[in-house]
Length: 336
Image 1 (cartoon, rainbow, N blue to C red):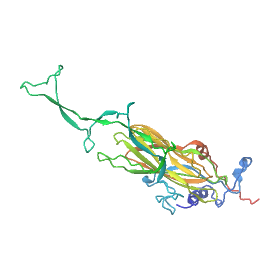
Image 2 (cartoon, one colour; image 1 turned 90 degrees about the vertical axis):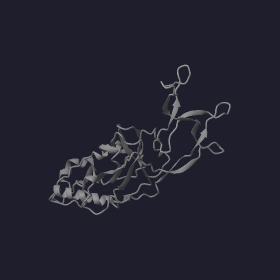
Image 3 (cartoon, one colour; image 1 turned 120 degrees about the vertical axis):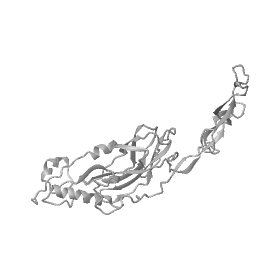
Image 4 (tube, rainbow, N blue to C red; image 1 turned 135 degrees about the vertical axis):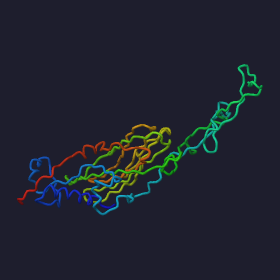
């Protein structure tokens, strides 16, 4: 996907022509607030397309469908984003103040992960064997347990006491058991505003998606993949230095927030959210070190069998920017 501005402008031009039948929209004129009263007679109308969300799976109302370009093609980034640096950890045995291993009782499981059981002899309150009317020892089936040495997860440190870091794959997979099958759904967010003939700058949260987590889905991590396509006021594609997909962790403990404090290039990243089945969660797409943009198409992919997208909107500083509305003024037929 190259030069998305041209594709969106092509769509905007059709709207512009329909609204200003007396003239074309071959250029955009910059104006100041002092010129607002003259907008109705401006030499050229302003050109913008408010933020719009498109469901490509519906196969309709997609203003980009008439133009060349594969919206499902991979978006270019300037570096590999499948790996992240994180603190290295290891399991160590827990010991008491005498240096002896600490033990704990755990539920025993079978090879398939199901709870293991065992037959246990029953006793009377006085500790004597319990028997039936035939004098036979009575038994019962109970959950099996095992005694294991207790361990804990700790950060790995070097000989100077500094925490060691490691590179790991950032891909998370959806838990798949009991025959569960994921289903990819997608949503495109599209925006353009060249009415000021200048770039817009916004940081932090800029797109918000609200998901309803479905009941009965397996516990685990559900990836929310994002692929951005940006353009600046010169019509040049702007590539992110790093794109970090989001994750929605369902009933599987807490999840660390994405830390981009050390990043110096353009970074686009999704949230990390912990929840449980039946919850409604807000998922944000964020941007850092925005060098200035006038247009984007943001593609978001999620598991439609695990969650339902119930709303989407602008967020943060971008909410005010995307809400701007510039009327397409009628062109002045005079060339003065």
